[in-house]
Image 1 (cartoon, rainbow, N blue to C red):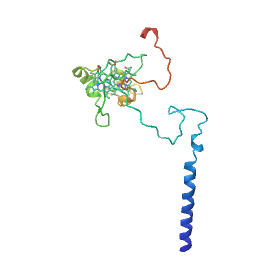
Image 2 (image 1 turned 60 degrees about the vertical axis):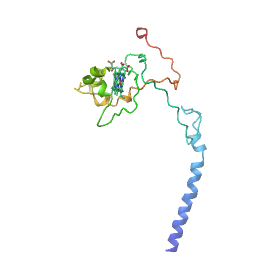
Image 3 (image 1 turned 90 degrees about the vertical axis):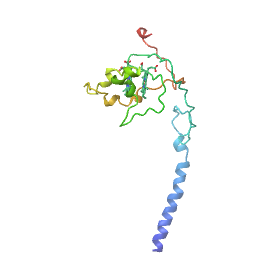
Length: 155
Ligand code: HEC
Ligand code: HEC
């Protein structure tokens, strides 16, 4: 019994002393092969400080789309608007049924089409989570450089 206990304790101690050596070996983690991520040249284990929240004015002029298939930006605040299994706050204003009364833009017919090409009588599941594609407008610095210009007919 005594012997078994010593074995358990020594193996325990071995695991204990070995593991911290791995996690402190920063070379193992920081060597990204010269590639710089959006977080910059920081070690993986470094926790970035939180971003300053981007200012989202309550009501703003809608920024024009840059290309035909672009999901339009959201020109209003969406704080507290829930989209989940039971409710979709966005549709309480943007559905065909409610848009007129609410003075909001109707979702377009593309939002009723499933990925198989069938047109449903209600929003297609693939268009249910609005914020997958639509984002609020904010005065934010681009994360990466972008030299895209729209075609003449859209300018
Ligand atoms: C209380 C009603 C209301 C709710 C809820 C609401 N919206 Fe809106 N939304 C509007 C109105 C009104 C406009 C018209 C433009 C404006 O605000 O100047 C608009 C504009 C938009 C536009 C721009 C459409 C265009 O004209 O091209 C998008 C995109 C949009 N909303 C997305 C959303 C999303 C996504 C949600 C949910 C997270 C949402 N909205 C929730 C009322 C609402
Ligand atoms: C998979 C991406 C995607 C999702 C999810 C999505 N949209 Fe869109 N939405 C688009 C695109 C792309 C356009 C522009 C082209 C078009 O109409 O299909 C658009 C257009 C719109 C417009 C402008 C319509 C017009 O006639 O100008 C509104 C309003 C809108 N979406 C609201 C919503 C709301 C509300 C939801 C959630 C119920 C939603 N969208 C979910 C991609 C998406």
